[in-house]
Image 1 (tube, rainbow, N blue to C red):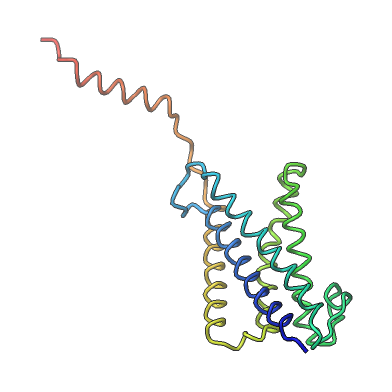
Image 2 (cartoon, rainbow, N blue to C red; image 1 turned 90 degrees about the horizontal axis):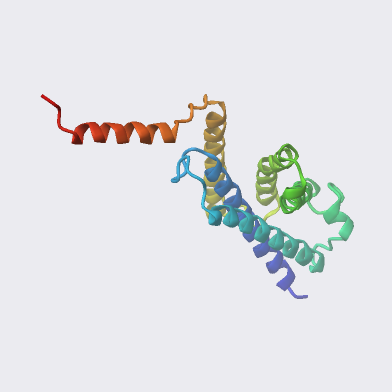
Amino acid sequence: MSALPWYVARSAGLVAWSLLTASVVWGLTMSTRARPFGHRPRPAWMLDLHRWLGGLATIFVAVHVLAILADSYVHFTLWSVLVPFASSWRPSAVAWGVVSLYLLLAVELTSLARRRLSKRAWRAVHFASFPLFLLSTVHALMAGTDAGSWAFVTVATTSVLGVAALTARRISDATRPVEPAVDAAGSRARVAAARRAVRVPSQV
C-alpha cells in the first residue's frame, strides 16, 4: 500500500491553506488605508498578485481532493468529498472542507467573470472570502494530521489574528467619513500665484 497519495493530499492541503491565507491578507491590505501607497491608485501587479494567489490556492485544493480520492487508506468516495457530512471519516471535519470548496469556487468563478457581473453582485460573493478563510482554517485544525504541531498552531493563530486586525481596520475605514477632495487645479493656481508674489518686488 503506497502512502504517496496521503502525503500529497496532506502537503497540498497545507499549501492551499497557506496560499488562501496569503490571498485574504493581501486583499485586505490593498483595501485598507494602511497600504503603503495611501490613496494613490494601486499598481497593477498588486491586484495581479492577489488573483494569482487565489488561483494557485484553487489548483492546490484540486490536487488535495484528487489525492484524497486516490488514497486507499481512508477510502474516500466522490460523494464523500462533494457532500457535507457524507464522509464516514471525521464527518464534521470533512464537512467544513466541503463547504470551503464550494465557497472557493464561488469566489474564484465570479472573479473570473467580474467584467460580466455588476459590482454589487461581485462584491457580495467576494465577501464569502471571510467565511471561506474561517471554515478552511477549522477544517485544517480538525482534519489535518499536522493540526497538533506547535508550528501549525502558531501559524494558524497568527493568521487568524492578522486577518481579524485587518478586517477591523477595513471596517473602520469604511465607516470613517470621507474627506472632501482637494481641487488640484485650484491648489496649483494658488501656489503659482504665491510664488509670483514672492518674486515680484514691491513698488514704492
